Image (cartoon, rainbow, N blue to C red):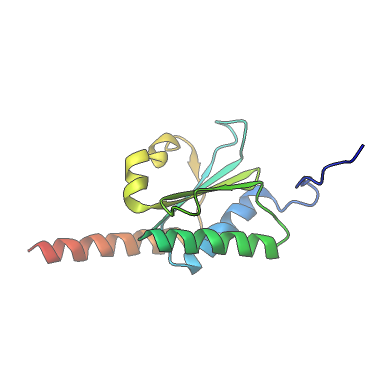
Length: 149
């Protein structure tokens, strides 16, 4: 009987999940992802320890962020168990087992409100990323308000 080669990662060879989530947030920030949030969900669900949610400003931007997350994780020796939605670029889900990454086109993120779903979970501080991403999003909104005047 032939055995299947599965992407099985043991905790001993896997980076700690919070460290992987933070690293993924930094990779997303390198591709100018906005509104990055990393939630610690291990107390709230059985299928993941951390959920990363971030946004791109267009479908091409979403695809670029998701591709970069796959490339960088592969270089780090962590392969995704599954990737969904990459062709459309509206909502890409990358499943790394203990860490799930959602890369949204911003209007789609607003529609599905995953941040609201995980709002009760602890948010992990991502030094140098969370504040700058929020500041960038706030400045984009402010410039839109200025254009309205």
